[in-house]
Image 1 (cartoon, rainbow, N blue to C red):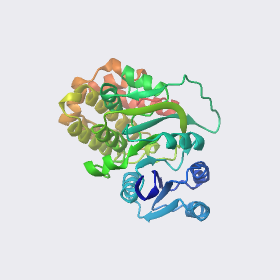
Image 2 (cartoon, rainbow, N blue to C red; image 1 turned 90 degrees about the vertical axis):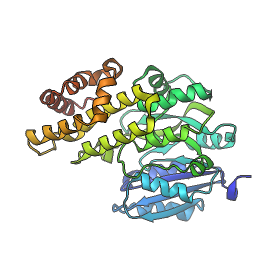
Image 3 (tube, helix red, strand yellow; image 1 turned 90 degrees about the horizontal axis):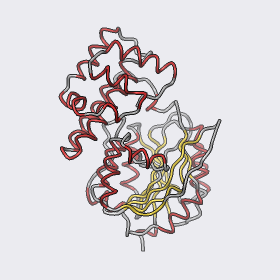
Image 4 (cartoon, one colour; image 1 turned 60 degrees about the horizontal axis):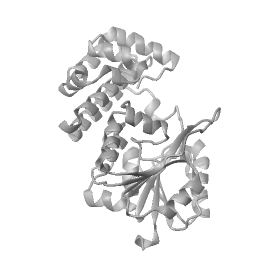
Amino acid sequence: MFRDNILASFIIPVYNTKKYLERCLGSVTAIQNKHIEIIIVDDGSTDGGSSIYEKYAKLDSRISIIRKENRGVSFARNEGIRLARGEWIAFIDSDDEIVPEVYDSQLLRLDTEFELWMLGIASRDTDFFELKRECVQGEWSAKEIDVIKRGIFHQDMKSAKRLQEQGFNLSGPVAKFYQRKIIIENGFLFPENLIVGEDCIFNFLYLKYVKSVSYTNECGYFYWRNDDSVTHKFRKGKGKQYLDTVEQVCNILGKDYLQEYAQYGVRYYLYAMKLDWCHTSNQNSYKVRKKEAMQWRQKLFVKDAFKNFDLLQIRWEAIPIAYCAKKKWFLLCDLLLKMKEKLSVRCR
């Protein structure tokens, strides 16, 4: 029997997502299985969303609430992991929603023959929703798991793109069931000093200890794009934080994943430029912005990434910018990225 009669722990970090919480918690509490716990970790919210999750907690005894000072989503997820009692752990972002009947069905299938269970995911917004894809399910063994590990950091490789098109999220922690035992016994958590890439690192480390994965692309999770999220907002210093992540990834991957690291490093250097040094909200002078960008471009791990990446294996929208960044043509990068920002063109 599973520990404390809890089969799975659902961990939901909450930070200033009041306008989405009703939708999220309504979907999670609709799960019929009684052998779950729902851990809400309030990461120092200031928007009054507590009234919503407190209401749900009164109605559903499976809910427990943890309140902490704001320290980021990784800290919140780690707190949930430390307090989780379930044999399995699932993560849900508080601005998203799940399909409860799919999760109920999945909970009945969970067993330790597989160390990771993956569900399908789809993006959804208030204006348009369409989900048409061929049903795919089965299991992945060691060879396929290595493909997943590579795809986490090289999302434009053909095999990774195919899995994404089928409805699987390789890099994020959602739409998955992790064995709590594997996380605890091997002593890894989400890195708390990063604002991006922490989920990639967590998944990569977890897959080091996994020999088999069960998967179905039946959609159990809906991702809602939230333009107010930390990821999509300008904040001075983001470039440095993103490239700190790249350096950590370099150290974690090692020589066996040189190509994957190179693609990841270049992609995030471009993203750092897009959301920091070349962003229209950055009020620093051109000279200062160029100096900062070029200082990071000269770092050894960034230089290695540009030396080893394949220009034709990145998203086509990013190719002109990647070429200019490789040549260190900051002015052209600045102009192209500002144009893309105004046109809302994706380049990562």
